[in-house]
Amino acid sequence: MDTTTISKVFSGKDIFPMLGTDYVEFYVSNAKQAAYFYQVAFGFNLVAYKGLETGSKDITSYVLQQGKVRFVLTATLNPDDPIGEHVRKHGDGVKVLAIQVENAKEAYETALERGAKSAGAYQVLKDEFGEVCIASIHTYGETIHTFVERKNYNGPFMPGFQAKQSLMKIDPVGFEFIDHCVGNVELGEMDKWVDFYKKVMGFDLLLTFDDKDISTEYTALMSKVVSNGTGRIKFPINEPAKGKKKSQIEEYLDFYHSAGVQHVALATNDIITTITKLRRNGVEFLYVPDNYYDDLKDRVGEINEDIEQLKALNILVDRDDEGYLLQLFTKPVQDRPTVFFEIIQRVGAQSFGKGNFKALFESIEREQELRGTL
Image 1 (cartoon, helix red, strand yellow):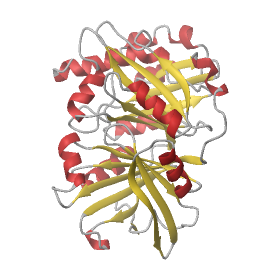
Image 2 (spheres, helix red, strand yellow):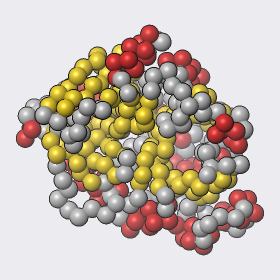
Image 3 (tube, helix red, strand yellow):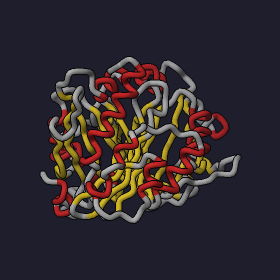
Image 4 (tube, helix red, strand yellow):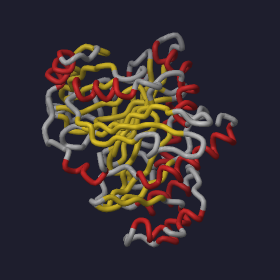
């Protein structure tokens, strides 16, 4: 499917109403330290907390927010429970991609009827601020989707959490919302999970990239993008393709030890300011050679941003028939070369930066070579 037709694919309808991404939950080895990192480096505000002080005897969770982006960082106090096992196997990684829905019970039951496997029965959580209804289903690897209904709740996050504020002055970097979340799956599994999202969730197939679209001299991968009817929730799904050397997808699978979330794309309205602040805060990004910018204007046409400024910050640009986009990718944010973040600004464009794939993947290969995993 041509990238220029992507905006025409959104049907505007879902099999059950989905309002957007509610939160992304990471299972981590040390939630307190992870929360500090995301506050200082990425400019998130601490908004809620659950731990020993709130009566939670088994887990600790910090809830961070910036714009409509909400992260939950969870660690266990018992190394032998499922959270401890998850961290031991995968390292720090994404466990939950939560979707806000109009009716969690209806969403859950519909998903089960259409073939989903339950990961958590429907329940209603209540406190003095109202009620939150949740239920969960399995997706690729050990990742789950939690349906969240919060229209009757006005607390800091959900029952069981208390409001909590950052102890230091936070300087937000400009994140507005989650643009998309990318999953890596094993060879031969991509179409299975595309079919899952189409059948179980009622998603549409937006784009297909084969190994000719996403390849370098040494490595390749294949990717398909699925989305709900409104386009608010988009999940690209990658699988490795044959190449001369080990692809980034294979490296991820080797270190994560299963399919899982590779990266979360965070949208900003001013990527120059966002990247400037992130670099100042010590966030590391992939490097793209200066010659990428030599013919940039010929490749993408007129843009509002100054090319020299983009070059200084290493920001990539691509165009489709709807407009253009600017993007940049962090290096992995934990010791294992697994989860990373994409920073993206869309100026009309609805695609995913196909014109940048070669430069991006060559940059990733340079990092793999340094790690000895290429």
